[in-house]
Image (cartoon, rainbow, N blue to C red; front, side):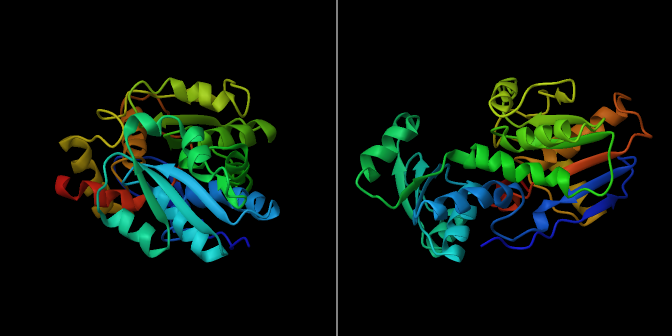
Length: 289
């Protein structure tokens, strides 16, 4: 079932950064991209081992997780259904979900908060139904994300990752601790009030001095942006040829540049940024560009 991973490490040559390398998880797959494949890998294996053939998951109208789940389901012989938060809409992301065969159920924001109840009320009698939490958050997802570290051929002083649920960060931290690396993991929450990410990480591994949270780079909150961030994206992409998105990766790269500019990170330190994909999210902000 598992596809071969193609995720090289590339050095970035741009004035804002010193000694910066990028783990290109965005190159794994066009639709099951970046940390989405990492998270789904062992979830799909578990569903298959339990003879479950209907994947049920959750997300917003511009969710990369929904597209990834729909694409993976089609590729590996599953049915898929998603509860979509908010009023019924049509957009590019949901079009892709539908093309991959995913059934969409729109639910109001209050009902969406109780995902277990939604699953039970709609699929209690479906013995093939398999619950996948929003963003794929699970111990199986954490296991998949630990493999980012085990694939590395070199060690780094700092590793950076953007965070929404903290699942990818938990996998990275767990692997750093297991391998007893000197590396500091810098997590950039993309939501306001991102301190909760530490609590989410602690569900899967112990919190240690390897972890540093930077909560000041959310640019207004989840899926929020500013002209400054948009300008940064345009400049970064033009200078590097690497596409980044306004929701996750742009905030991470901005944070790295800012921390280096302020000498919080030594210019000689070796830095690895995890490019977690999610590039389709740009479609939801095309009017900003």
